[in-house]
Image 1 (cartoon, rainbow, N blue to C red):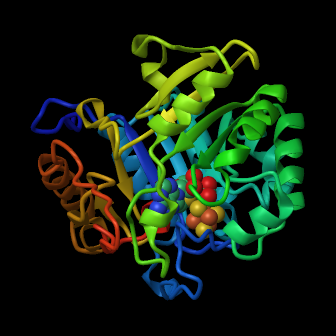
Image 2: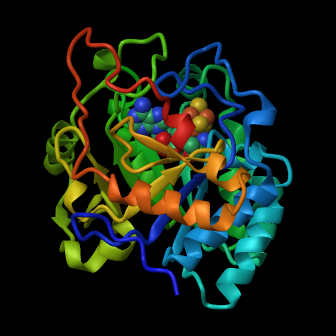
Amino acid sequence: MKQDLTDSYGRKITYLRLSLTDRCDLRCFYCMAEHMQFLPKKDLLSLEELARLTDAFIARGVRKIRLTGGEPLVRKGFMGLVHHLSAHLDAGRIDEIALTTNATQLSRYAHSLKAAGVERVNISLDSLNPYTFNTITRGGSLARVLEGVEAGLSAGLKLKINTVALKQHNVDEIPDLVMWAHGLGMDMTLIEVMPMGDTGEDRFDQYIPLTEIRARLDERWTLSDSPPTLNQAHSGPARYAHIAQTNGKLGFISPLSNNFCASCNRVRVTCTGKIYMCLGQGAYVDLKAAMRGVDSSDALNQALDVAIGRKPLGHDFEIAPTQPSTLSRFMSATGG
Ligand code: SAM
Ligand code: SF4
């Protein structure tokens, strides 16, 4: 019996975020450059390899797998992987298959996802104004995303809205977004812009600390912080508050103004098989090489041990005027 994946600080790794592709049908300006150079398809792990990789993580104690990207729903054949994970779910080997998506394709897949056992889906949406949405995503259609949200809700998926707070574009709209999400029974989480990848835009111009947004919301509504013990299993790095007037939950993910590393239980794997032990650091271990060599199962397990042994205590994010990105890697490589 192989051992669990416990790092050198005693944190047990039970949560894998797996990126299915670096491609996306949107170009959110804080996430990607306008003219992105995507990876050649041959560099990607095949769906069979992705399935084998998930098997290895599950055998080592991972209980939750989140599919992400790029945009996971643009990876051809991704439902095959969902069905593979579904068998693990049915057998009680994992607790959850989750998904993070921009929802442009969700109306096509919502029912199949629900039927395969996916319960909770995070949808990224930064504005309810079609023009602002189009600007932030560099060309996206808000109407398609709203169709996706509607389909997700009618399929019975539990949706959560993730919104990146952007100083110049959506800060004034945040109360409306909260009221809309809570009105439809969806929780919402606000995220601070993180300095990842050179998008050709100055991140400092986009960055606003969530402490400032929280202060504005406190003036308007009554927010009561949820005790961390109540939401530890699902919230991850977010701190949640209940808003009395909207009767919904609002999470705050603030890696820059509020570090959450001590309880980190997750690792991220890119679509090329690189495992990143921390979102905010550049170190990785190449699992693809291990998987494609001889004795691949042993090699993969050894590579996992090496990776987990190198998981750092915390991230190195910093943001300052005119400072280039701390990390050259784009968020779309590891899926947030
Ligand atoms: N395409 C899917 C989506 O947008 O939900 C999944 C991948 S996307 C990289 C995952 C999350 O990362 C999204 O919520 C997105 O807003 C967030 N994100 C991307 N770049 C970011 C950055 N530089 N700082 C903070 N959040 C970022
Ligand atoms: Fe695509 Fe998601 Fe990045 Fe936007 S945040 S460009 S939807 S990967």
